[in-house]
Amino acid sequence: MLQTQDLMVPHDQSRPSVAAVTIVVPCYNERENVARMVAALDRALPGIAWEAIFVDDDSADQTAEEVRRIAQSDFRVRCIRRIGRRGLASAVIEGVLSSSAASVVVIDGDMQHDPARIPDLLRALDAGADIAVGSRHVQGGDAAGLDGVWRRRVSRAGIGVATRLMGVALTDPMSGYFAMRRELFDRLAPRLSGQGFKILLDLLLSAPTALRVAEIPLRFQPRLAGESKLDALVMAQFIGVLIEKASYGVIPPRFAAFAAVGAVGVLVHYTVLVAGRASGLPFEADQTAATIVAMAFNFWLNNTLTYRTNRLRGVPLVRGLAVFIVVCGLGAVANIGIANTLYRAHSGWTPSGILGAIVGVVWNYAVSATLVWRMR
Ligand code: GDD
Ligand code: MN
Image 1 (cartoon, helix red, strand yellow):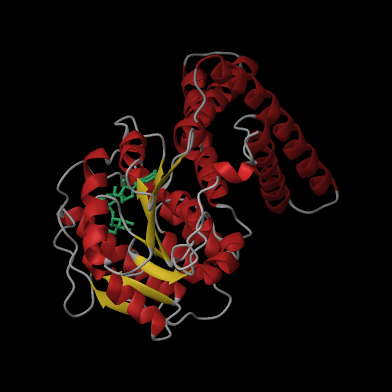
Image 2 (cartoon, helix red, strand yellow):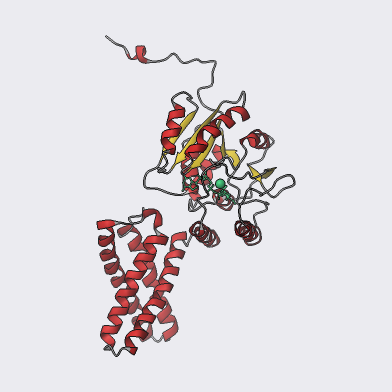
């Protein structure tokens, strides 16, 4: 009879069974860069027990297949394929949490970060840093690879906000290239927002006490293949993360977006109302039409912006719209009820109206997040 032992490969005790350092590589449509990355890691880390975890969000260009093809002949390479998910920060978090190594390095998968700098980052950790960052803005680094005047302006503005408003003492808090001990990451992980692109800033702002940060000069390389995924929506998410951190986690990033969409909805409502008055529609019919149009508009905008990573399509879209209208209808009833009660208790119409509206938007957000977009 075949014994279990017969199937086991004898373990070589002289070799480490766990990597000393995990390189976490977020990637989305980076098929052409995977082999380049593995080869560059091999060159950059001689004599170091490393492993690479590529975290792919089900790229259409078959990035995951390419990683697994390379993994067939290189056990140091692994792939996490996430389905129905998007996001650089959350990809990094899941990659790091899957590591059992003592140290982790996070690096872009498009070769804009030079893997040859990894030993410098690891040395900085050994010298006592909590986080070692590849920085484009210290002496010897540069951001030349950042294409476009606008990208550079936005990048500088973001750094300005982070350093002045949030008190982060770092020349490049937006860097996507850094090393840290996994144990520290594990401690901070439950506090992370995980939204958007700025995982390093998220980590720094989530630490209960200031972290010792070392900066290593980095020359940001131009992209060789593929294209950047950072767009206006990603930047809007960044504002949401800042609001979340500034409110000590009370205001979730999505709530800010949801409330902004709601404010636009008020304008839509008003515009329809004015048009209806001009065309001589009875007021009740006009107000009803304006309410329905504003709700449908809010639903559409939330579906494309606020919940774009969970975007509904097809039948779930129709179902979602129906649930959204019911939820917001109940929200309106709560809003009016609370405002009326306060008003009758002589609270004045301004505070009564504002409090009613706040209760309405909080209700709409909380309930539609779970029932319509099924967020956990
Ligand atoms: N898994 C996953 N999911 N990976 C992603 C996603 C995503 O939704 N979006 C982007 N990536 C991967 C890309 O494939 C690439 O390997 C890396 O994350 C960086 O994305 P880019 O789209 O190339 O970003 P960039 O070059 O414009 O921005 C870089 O510079 C910024 C500062 O200017 C990044 O390093 C950012 O982290 C950095 O903040
Ligand atoms: Mn890039």
